[in-house]
Image 1 (cartoon, helix red, strand yellow):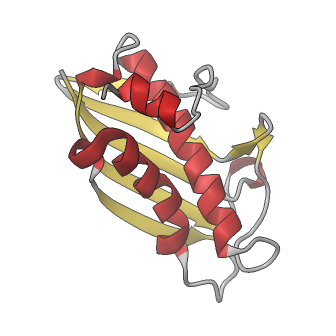
Image 2: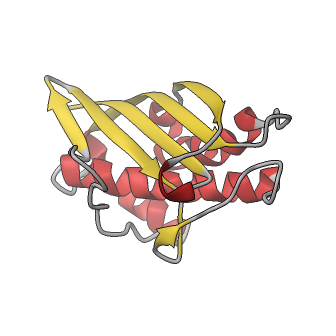
Length: 152
């Protein structure tokens, strides 16, 4: 099954690539490595605002991280000229979780992104990662995730 067919079977339609919110670009390619800028969680096209452990549950955070995965795939798709089959490996994710000081489930929130990437890309989607709790994120977003991928 192609990546596009897999997305269709999951009822996922990739959105338009996000516009940078400041002085940066959404991705940079250096050789076969693609560095994808941090993408914040969005709900209904607007920043998904909240803080884990204060006004959001771990499950809501997982949903937000899954939404980030969809936006990351849209950016990958643009970087690959519409052919996600060019992705050779999702190498690493760095996940920032807007969280209360006593929240300790950043890794479970980030699973929302990791699990979807593995489901869509199979073994190619399995990656190294880091998940951090932070006091705040741009626009009050609950989750921000950046990615490194290998492409051909």
